[in-house]
Length: 600
Image 1 (cartoon, one colour):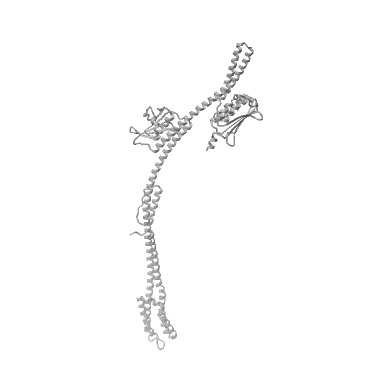
Image 2 (image 1 turned 60 degrees about the vertical axis):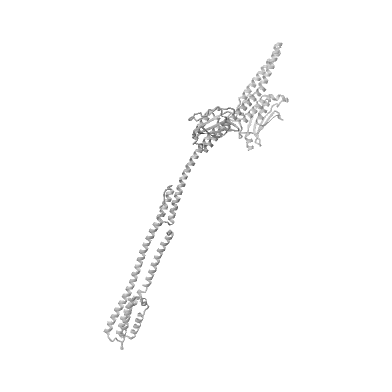
């Protein structure tokens, strides 16, 4: 049988209390209704005694009129409706009947022919008995009224006691069935709020609160299970994040080292030691090979495990087969070639026991390290190639400078030496003196050109940038001549590559030296600006005599070298005479940063 619910039980308790109250009220009303005319009945019954005495007195006084009126009044009192409510009360009704019958017997004694009673003594005795009967009737009615009052009081007391008892029972039931289970639920909720998922509630009843307690226990068990799994997962995720952070920091350090400087053998050793600590591997080995070499020129192993397992004379099998996993001598061998753009730089080898295969994150880290090392070695090779090209270009420039300056001066001096030999052979003093002057002037010119070349070759762009280098150049040229040089530099906001800065500086210096030595002018303007299409524009103008008419003499001004440098920058160089006198050199090219922005 399914027990009553809490709500049903509360409703039953309320119904009992209401029923008790209604019953008490109805019984009280019934008792009060029965006792409603008791006082009136006592009063009427008591008036019968008074009227009996009055009749006796009127009889003795011999007043017939008043006596008849008194008899009529007494008769109406005997027939008063208040006595009808005692019809169902045998005791009172019997006494009433007895008193009334006695009155019927007494009434004839009050009548006589002369208006006086026949026997006063008999009348007195009958009247005394009549009053005695009326006293008994009044006493019975009074006792009945008092009994009803006592019953009413008893009902009130019983109702109060029943109400108190029922209230105690209901309060106890509510405490046991509702309050205590709710307190257990509140206590369990607080325990859960404090993180205690082991607390369980005792299910006492199979009602709503019992169902709630049962559900609460199931929820607590589920939350405890989920919380335990969550803590375990959080711990696992935390460890995974720590591993990821360590790997990312390691890769970041490698990338930063690559960007800051080229990796050396000490860097590779430190990298391998740290990588083995992160991977917790058995054996780790890094072999670096040249493009054509068959054996490693650098073999790096951790300091704590320098077993030198791989001592092969030919490592092409490690490189040519690419990334793979093999089993060699009861070991798992992982190979990660250092490849970039079809170039092989070496191989990263890991040896593990068969029961300790590398996890996915370990293999990914090894692959990332191999790619970064390949990138570092590739950048190192490209950097060396750029240096070689730059060295060859500078050597070509030096060769052109020597050919256009010292070589021509030395050829001229060689011709003068031939003339000197002829003058000595013919003993021509005039020729000898002329040759001596030419040799002196040629040597002075050659010495001056040598100093200019040394100054040009020592020229560099340091950390201060192109603007500072141009200011230094202008200062040097101003000290060497009386030419007023004005520099207008408008590229402070534009980043230039070192190659662009060197070529621009050499072009400006070569053109400025030509203006100083050959223009015969008094002013020189050097302007560097940016056009609307983001190209760099160089404008160099003097107010001298301009270019010579003979094209063959242009090479004597280093113009070919400027043309060569302008082609290196991918720009256009124009050299022409100005309309208002002097020479104008105009150069225009697109810097690398703007070209990359346009392509993007």
